[in-house]
Amino acid sequence: MPSAAVCATCGQRVATQDGFELYAPDAARAGNGYDPALYPELAALEDQNFWFQARNRLIVHVIRRFCHGFNSLLEIGCGTGQVLRAIGAAFPAVHLSGSELFVEGLAFARQRVPTAHLMQMDATRIPFTSEFDVIGAFDVVEHIRDDEVVLSEIHRALKPNGKIILSVPQHPWLWSHQDELAHHVRRYRRRELERKLERCGFKVAYSTSFVALLLPAMVASRVGRRRTHAGDALQDLRIASSVNALFARLMHIELALLRAGMRFPLGGSRLVVGLREG
Image (cartoon, rainbow, N blue to C red; front, side, top):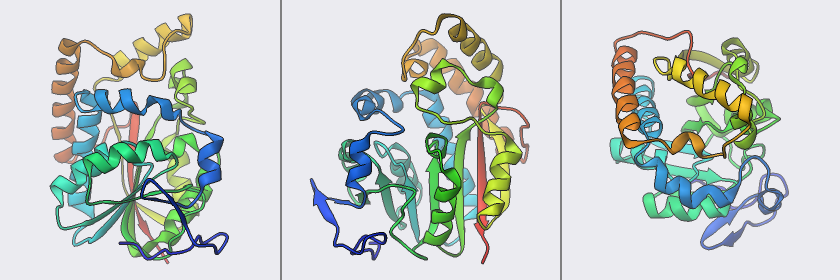
């Protein structure tokens, strides 16, 4: 279990709610970056949705490839615990921690990963120093205006030679009403993200697009929504089972190509692995 007993920013002992440590309760009440009312439906959708399953397999793949011998992992913005559960199943001996701005999400995560250490936390104020071997943030930093503050905080919370793993939405030209509904601040360019990591003390070890084979379908869907401004934050997840099965097969092919060493220049998302330097 991580060693933080007091808040690093104020020096006070940490309060708890429903058994979760609260490192930034005021930030949670501010309600920035995500709508916690979405958690129940999100939890019901993500176990079957092709995108979540494909992203989990890719995350586990890059952890196996780049994080040999690691013992501890923190997921920032763990939401309902869907990624943490997949990592725990693949690496059962690893000590897992998860943080989320909203306590509502942690209740779902506790059901999915009961052995993980779960806490409420603001990613711009991480109360740990040299604590974790690996820190992941999967589709999180695009919600945070001060993303370089988060990257610097992650650098401090990692042990020497620790790894950061990020996934983010990619290509500003894909921006649509759906990004606004999801409370995104930005979609990233490849070099933008990599340069930010480098400025915050990381050496980029791996970088690739993914959701590449489905990019034409994604473009078509978003162009349609630009015209109508219809939809809601979870609309992309509500798809017919036949379409979901087709997209899942295409993502299986894409993951096989990534495992074989291919890196895609274009894709709806980007995954990056960085090594803490210094």
